[in-house]
Figure 1 (tube, rainbow, N blue to C red):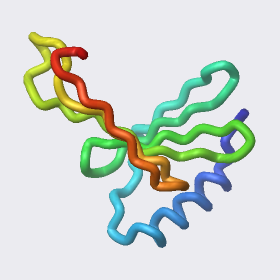
Figure 2 (spheres, rainbow, N blue to C red):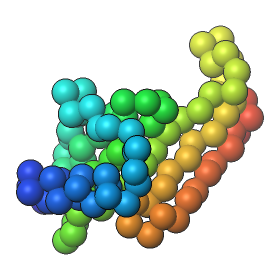
Figure 3 (spheres, helix red, strand yellow):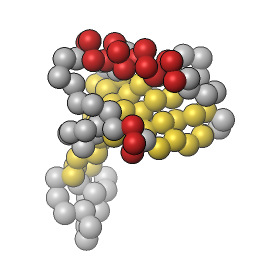
Length: 101
């Protein structure tokens, strides 16, 4: 299902009102893909290395997502964590990894 520009604009208005001084979304670097006919749009934030992920089944869903490395991951398996925040319920999830586990 496609995400309309109006839905995103409405969400961004609420985002800026709800979270004063929130990082801006960098729309020029946004990417989109389709998974099982569902549109997914990834938009990086101007600061903080995270991004907002927009998707839609029946209603627009937005999640903050970021990956934080705690070591040099070029030569070793990933150590660090992934975190996400559901931007509707503000439910927070974090998954820790130590050398890929």
